[in-house]
Length: 223
Length: 223
DNA sequence: TTCATAATATGACTGTTGGTCATTATATTA
DNA sequence: TAATATAATGACCAACAGTCATATTATGAA
Image 1 (spheres, rainbow over the protein chains, first blue to last red):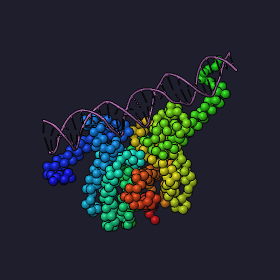
Image 2: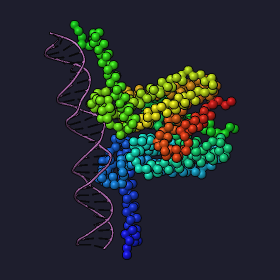
Image 3: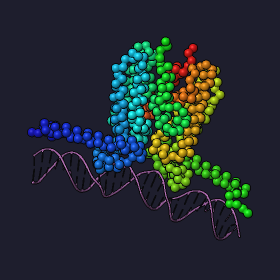
Image 4: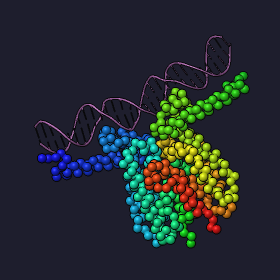
């Protein structure tokens, strides 16, 4: 008696292969989508162009993703994981040179320079009408990655407090504030680089450093 | 001999009336658009619905605005002028109580509570594909208003430096940093209030206060 | 008042695009 | 080899931004 729910060995192998093929297709689609979205932005990109670029029919795309928005946010999820890996390297920084949060900012800024385009997605992802067309699972996944990134920054702050470099603050709150500050400044500059330089008259890197300086000054334990 | 370029008195009066009627129509359209955009967001709103709401034909809308995006950003421009007026009240605060930047944050937060929806537009307006469909004049107008708002904050910082409350910093840079910080934090919370509370576990107002506290601590002259 | 002309408004129409689904092609298993 | 399950296709549909030929209204002269 064979129960339809129980698979034999070769069936397991096969279904495993299926899963991998499915993953591979997904990646192929995402690669094409990344190129198109990075080049055109969400609004001007079309699913047809993504399909064309990876030589699949449009219908096939929708076998792998629920909506244009779902593809878009999946790319953001990728980007956040990339950032997470970069920040992960900071885990065993010990702050012996008195620098802790500085390394986090530096890593984040480095990531920005190499992966500017992901930030556009991040900023657009705050729009509720876009989020409405993205699955809860994917959104949760993004949030979890964000939480991990924030956790790394928070740990650095915690380390600094233990070492007496920083005042006794809520590391978690400070991590969130640092994160938001940097994003806010980057958003200001993304807004429109031309006008922005006119308005602020200060280069992004200098502005970030000034901001960090200010916050750090407030953060540092009084000598 | 009458030159077609020269108008007599009644013609001038009439053309003046025309101009006012044109302005009035614009306002009517903007009011309807604001309602629709605030309710549905940019992507889910339709120009047809805006037209319906102000009882005009769609074609008429396009006599007054160049694109859906132009309407959207016009609403943002309105919002920024509103904010400018709120901040304008701070101009003759003298800081006798040792509070300067605090008032700016308080005013900005108050504006946010009353006019949340404008922030969604602000965050979306950083997308280049959207900006591409907005006239340069309108974008310049927005930037000018932003500059004025920042100027007010910058003046408060300058005042604080003169009074010896704050360290000698670049008031303009600090104004930009404060502005960006608050926007960054608000964006974090707009991202998704539910998840965000889960992640940060801290209320927006508390977070803003902590951020201000940190920055102010770095800003304050050492007693 | 009447008619000609200019200014303004209209909504049917067009092209584009996100998403669907009946059909076709391919792989698997008996 | 035939039957069945799985995956891919692209013609099709509905929705929507934006257009433009036509209709309506206001203006000014006679």
